[in-house]
Amino acid sequence: MSELSSAPVLVTGGTGFLGSHLVDQLLAAQRTVTVVSRQPRRELEARGIRVVVGALHDPAVCANAVKNVKTVFHVAARVGVWGKHEDFHRDNVVATETLLAAAQTADVCRFVHTSTPSVVYNGRDLAGADESLPLTTDCPSPYPLTKAHAEAKVIAANREGFATTALRPHLIWGIGDPHLVPRMRARARAGRLRIVGSGQNRVDMVHITNATQAHLDAEQALAEQVCHLIDDKPGGAQHGSGPAGRAYFITNDEPVNLWEWINELLTALGEPPITKQISLKAASRVGAVCEALWSVLPLKGEPPMTRFIAAELAKDHWFDLSAAKRDLGYQPTVSMAKGTRALIEQLRD
Image 1: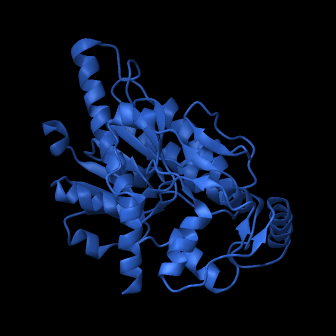
Image 2: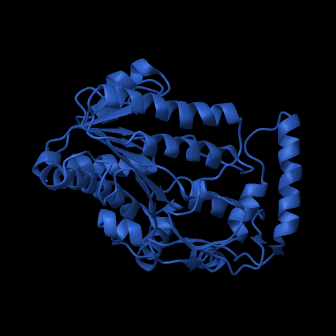
C-alpha cells in the first residue's frame, strides 16, 4: 500500500463518467493524477490535476502523459453502436497501441485497461459466461471488434516489469450516468422503445461505485502480485496466479430481468412502462435496414436500431465473477436495489 500511495497515475478518459469517478477516488487518496483531454480543462487543473491536451493516437501526447507515471488507467475509448470502422480503430486500437508503447518506454509499472464484455460477442446468449470465451472476430458493430483488438494488445504487452490487465465492466450506471439511463428514458418517452424478444432475458450491470473500486482493486492486485513474485518466485509478472496478463468481467453479480428493471425505473419516475414487443428476428431485420440507410444516406446520429442492439436487448448477458473475486479481491458494495433507489430519488428531484 505504501508504494501505491505515492505512485503517480495517468487516467485517460478522466473527464468521462467512469474516469471522473476514478480521478475523484485517486485525489481523495492524495495520489498525483494526470489526465489526457482533447481540450484544456482549467477546472481540473484547479484541483491539482495535470492535464495533457491532445489525442491518444499521437505519440508525442502519450509520451508527455506518461512522464513520471507508475500506473496507467486506460479508460478512454470511442463508444457507440454505429460509426466508421476507421474512427473506432484509430481511437480504440491505435490509441491503445501508442499508449502502451509510451508507457513501456517510460518505465510505467502497471497498465489497467478498461475493456467491455462486448469483446466476447458471439450472437448467442451469455449466461454465466466466464473469461474462457474467445475474443470476437465477427460482430456487426465496430465497437466490440476494435475493443477486442485493443484488449488483446494490452494482454500481449504484459511482461516482467510491466504488468497489464483488462477489466470488462458491463453496463455502468448510477447517479450522473450520461448514457444508459438517460437514453433509455428518452427513447421510452418518445415511444421508440420496445421489448425485444421474449422479455425474459437476464443481464448483469455494474454500479459506478463498484466499477470504480474494481479498477483500484486491479491496481492493488497487480502491485501485490509483482511484489509476491519478486519475493518468492523471481522471473516476472507474467508468471504465477494473479491479474497480470489476464482479463476480468466486472458486474454487480446480481443478474436482473432487463425489462423488469427498466419498467421498475420508468414506473417509479412516473413514466408508462414498456409493454409493446417485437421479435428478435423482426428487430434484426429492422436493424439491417437502418444500417443500410445510414450507410448510404447523410443521416445524422446513430440508427434507432441495429443488429447488434437487437441482440443486446434480447439475449442473456450475465457473467461468472469468480475470477475477479479471486484475483482482484473484488466485491460489489452497492447493490442493484440500493443503487436503483438512490438513482430514482435523484431523478425525481
